[in-house]
Image 1 (cartoon, rainbow, N blue to C red):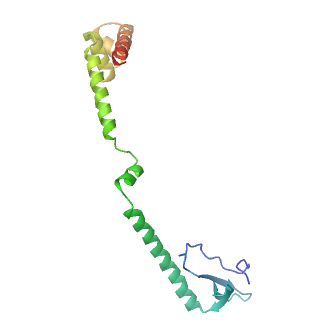
Image 2 (tube, one colour):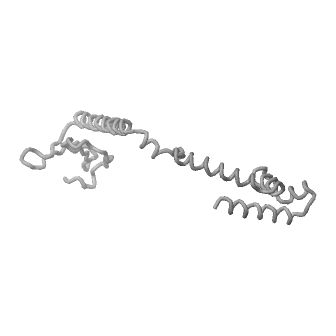
Length: 167
């Protein structure tokens, strides 16, 4: 009987060690009696298939499971031993900023603060309230007692000045 016989009990697909030379199979005959087999290739390259006892089958099956467990442990060991700062960083969900990024961000922040400092007082105040104080144009206009459009135009003008100063 070949491995595709309709009475074969399906075996779970398992990863096997490269040096594992045998394959286990179980078949049920017409009278619903299980037969256990081990297959391997002998030294002359012939495919040999032997019927074995249920106990021996269980022993080989347990060996395969233990072997698989060992393979998984080895894989985990290799994976963990190869973890370096670079590989951990590559796996990180939120990668830390590089030193260059931090320095660049600080330089840009300093330039932005200097550009804001060069704005006229009214524009500077409105810009800071809108972008950093989380106030709306209407809230700023109500606070200063002026029109919504005046605040909006003032902030747009402040942004244009900042763009010119930063470029």
